[in-house]
Amino acid sequence: MVRVEHLSFSYNHNGGQIKVLDNINLMIPEGTTCALIGPSGCGKTTLIYLLAGILNPDRGTIFIDGSPVRGQRRDVAIILQEYGLLPWKTTWNNIALGLKLRGVRSGEIEDRVDRILSELKLGDYKDCYPRQLSGGQRQRVAIGRALSLRPRLLLMDEPFSSLDALTREEIQDLFLKVWKKYSLTAFLVTHSIEEAVFLGQKIVVMSSPPGRIVTVIDNPHFAREDWRNDPSFYKQCGRLRALLKEGL
Image 1 (spheres, helix red, strand yellow):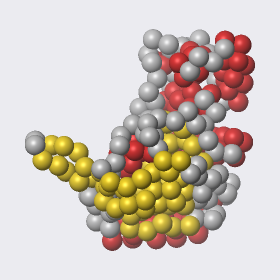
Image 2 (image 1 turned 180 degrees about the vertical axis):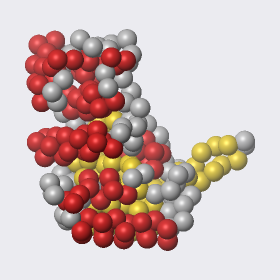
Image 3 (image 1 turned 30 degrees about the vertical axis):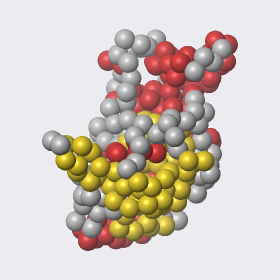
């Protein structure tokens, strides 16, 4: 689904350039979840923006479904850390926003949004504004808005980082249900070792800046209902923690 070849990116700063990503090569098979973890400043969010077509690389190429990325694609959706909800719009209208911008007919918008409200248990909050919702509910709205676009690739930039521990686990479980139901390919940036091990079928470990890929771990037991309580879970977390320290 996603292939990244020899990707590098730099930001302009005070007349010079700061290299953020250096020679990134990555494959994400269709229908998998891939978690990206690394130290601050290693270019994790920048890579999300490159995959989304918001930024253009200095060097290298990104392919999605065999086609090089040139600008934003209709089959890619992104969920940001701070939800990205418009405070003057209700839950219903925040979810419908992308569909309206794409010119989807009103009847289909109503069908899609109402279905998503039911699936994400937001029906009782459809007329609420973001300020009237809890953090977990706001995250459900952000997920719903992305799903309404029926993406094949879902990009997520630390989407659960601002939630308390129990709500975070609840939304992680919800994400896995959504991933399975919609057969998505998902790419998740996280700072949490435990989150990467729980959600990532593949875990990409980045080095300190400029970001390089240290290794890619296969994580076959991810998404199991009892995975968080399995001794192997903590063993995998320990392995990942050691790899992160090696990359500093």
